[in-house]
Image (tube, rainbow, N blue to C red; front, top):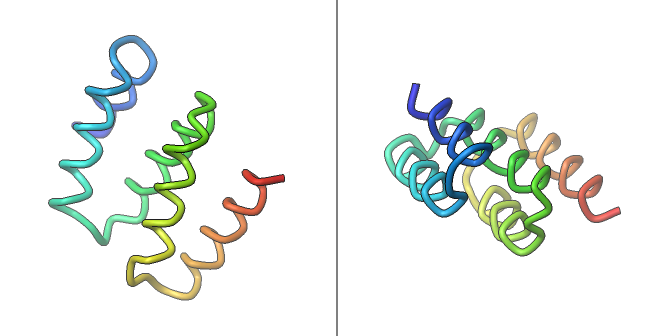
Length: 81
């Protein structure tokens, strides 16, 4: 529910408020890769390059499964091309 609210904040409200909501979610649930992907996808879609790169770097630094890391690297590569 909160992630949907954060996404709607990106669309219709303030990007800063949406970032705060996502950061709180990720602090509470750092292993929820779906939240990481929602967050970075929205930043990329809105063209926030520096924030997207920071998120990708944080995703890479986090302890995650090989399958998820493959997806992260693939997204990061597509983003940079």
